[in-house]
Length: 393
Image (cartoon, rainbow, N blue to C red; front, side, top):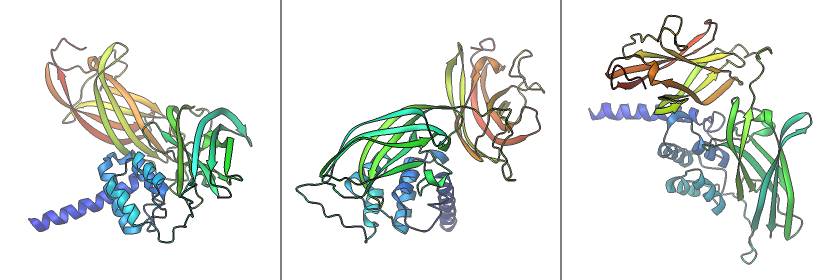
């Protein structure tokens, strides 16, 4: 029994490592064998995909650091950056012990240590540069005791939940695949004031699905070798990405096979919308090789054994065969499009069942409105309680 348990544990650990590596979107980083960069470690900690806990991510990344090492030195500023991303003491200790031995020596005068005094950050929206529309990020700060030291200002973009946006264009991404724009700095004075140091971010580099998003600019000052000198600010802003016109020809997907990778599903119960009480179903999924297609997330409410639940005759949530079905329109804008939270509201009044507790499931598919395309995604079990056969609210 002990041998079987050990083997099972090893298999699960291996499976976890493989899934976690893929979930962090580090196929070009964690999937390699070289030392991890700061961007790669932060990406792994901040990633919300895969449904793993912060403890699990910390454990896996700590093992990777111990095995492979890192490319950066853990200064006080970098330690603070790691802690903000959720790093544990064990991970930071491992990073300190596996820092490169040939880390550049910085001759710091204890009587005049490097100082960064941050003043403010602001943004000009809808600016056009070289034919591209985007946002110009302005920063104001003062650098002291850093005369003739090579530095850079780097700006990344986070989702409201901490996930860092990625970019497919090499000119706008770091080694971890994250969207990043940087600008070199070299102070010419002992106390150098930068009243308006700016960078430009094109909107079309934002790897994000259409819709309104709460985002944050993450501005930092680094040494050229990737050692963090000072975190400047997190600047919240709202960004709306319009849906592409459905009259245009969808881009090709280079012959790739369409697929759907489910992140996770969850339900908020007893939610009220438009005066109706019901359940709000959340779905996180990645759609591959379906760029530009007009699709729908279809949620069919069924009995746990797959039995049909018939919709009301006049219900707009009635499918062709009479099943209770809810739809949400989606249009992938990338070859690998991540939908972080597709929300579908299901009013309790639409579920026509007698009094009692019912074991149900959501049959989840990605379909085309014309019925010519159908990819099954998941069966999600849940319980539904009807207090009385006449109470549908």
